[in-house]
Picture 1 (cartoon, chains in turn brown, orange):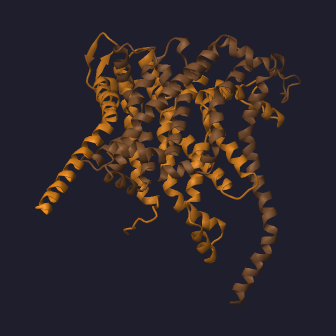
Picture 2 (spheres, rainbow over the protein chains, first blue to last red; picture 1 turned 180 degrees about the vertical axis):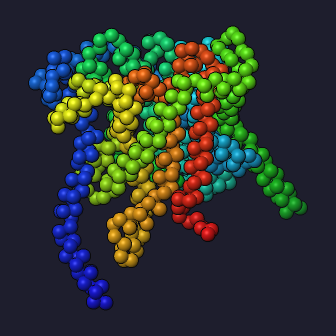
Picture 3 (cartoon, rainbow over the protein chains, first blue to last red; picture 1 turned 90 degrees about the vertical axis):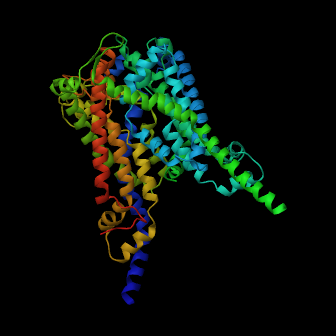
Amino acid sequence: MSSFLDTALISNTRRVWHPVFRQLGLLVLVLPGASLFLIPWLWMLSTAGKDTALIWKTPPVWIPPVYHWENFIKAWLQGDFAVYYLNTFYISGMNVIGILISSVLAAYAFARIRFPGRDVLFVVVLSTMMLPRQVTLIPLYMIFSELGWINTFKPLIVPLFFGDAFSIFLLRQFFLTISRELDDAALIDGCRRLGVLFRILLPLTRPALAVVAIFNFTWAWNEFFTPLIYLDSPKLFPITLGLHRFIGRAQIDIQFLMAMTIVSTLIPIGIFFLTQRYFIQGIVITGIKG
Amino acid sequence: MTAHSSLSDFLKRRLTQRTEDILTAYLCLLPWIIGFLAFTLGPLVFSLVLSFFQADLFTRNIFVGFGNYVDLVQDPLFLKSLRVTAIYAFVSVPLGAATALAVALLLNQKVVGLGVWRTVYYLPSVISGVAVAVLWMQIFNPRMGLINNALKVVGIEGPSWIFDSTWALPSLIIMSLWAVGANMLLYLAGLQGIPTYLYEAAKIDGANVGRRFWHVTIPMLSPTIFFNVVISLIAAFQFFTQSFIMTNGGPNNSTLSMVLFLYRKAFQQTRFGYASAVAWVLFAIIICFTLLFIRSSSLWVYYAGEERTE
């Protein structure tokens, strides 16, 4: 009993000092790693505003005496980035629309309706998530080229109107968190099945729809492989292909390249900062775990 | 009479409700079912068939049996890509998992400025692989790049990184660590799901920090680790963008990944049959390792609420 009291007292007296030392100790651990993660960003920002002479200077100058903001404008105009931006917005927006329509319907069926074959079909949905896309790539390319879809946006957009496994899974998990009693009440009142989806579930899961939209928009924005396969003419390029094309140009200046790399990341970063409380607090992930 | 009619009414309503349910369900699933058949299952079967043919886009399609696979085994470039992919996957995945877990453990503490730190670690995984690749190309630049300038400060003459066949693959692995933020978030969510009473109980039993980590944190986190490693492994086997943009497989094929090899065969040489065989070898490897991993999971993954049969 007395030893128990002793330990209690000791840990109490310790607690007075603990927080400050603890904070210092933690910061000593957090800061070096955080700087390693932060430095590439700062370096990119710094490089984008330099002139050619300053770029090759060693040791590197971190804060250029004159920050050449005009690098951004020059590079933007040189690289047709307005076109790339518009294309990326169009492709990503269409992806979100297609995925939302098709995946909401499928997720609703899986979450709420009992029908023969449901469990088997759901396992199929899950297993398509594991499938490496290279396995279907070549036949898809042949089909799309047969249809005359090469060098159009169609291969990047049309398939997504037929559902996306990850989004179906995510939305199903979200639907399952809503009490079924609401559905039953509505059904007894003579509401149809689809009426339940549109009048009860969707209004209640608006945040989940936003999460799915944001995820897919960002993924589509960052997508490189699919557009690389299907698009040839630069006037159709999304920003990832545009940036790749920009490197390919002979003797492109590094400061212009860095400026456009920054520009290409503005939308994903902006979306992240607008929605970060969901990500950082882990709400999104809790939803996935469901 | 009233009882009878209401019973039949009831049955009729139940039956029509059930039929309506099934019809509605399949109507809702129709787009996905069509998409699955047209864009997944059909092409999957087609690509398996194709891998037994010598096929280019429109002209000759000659049945060659296992010929493509036999050629693959003897193709030094393919074997090289297999080795490169294996090294990349088996080094970058454990390294990335360890880094992500370490950062998550740290950021699970109540440190000042927590939101800022989490953002700093997470932000690189928000941007595209292309942007990351373009940025790190400059960071690895032997002359004006960040790394070699930093090394010069401590008196080391750095290698040529992505231009040096010994250092190119390690460069890509180092770069991949910058984007571990998504994994970090998943570990963080896992850590927050561990009930604190377990730690308190361990403390009362006299377990120190190390023992609490090995006997509470790791077992409770093992499902998250399992999920993360499976997903990362599948992604790592498909690595492409980095080597395509930064090194184009070079120098001397030291960063030639399987998918880059496949891309060249399919879209630069239009050898669709051969490329399909590559895709199926890749697929088989991914399935094997995933199954092996799932099999091994019963040995080391602990699911709370699951009965242990020993």
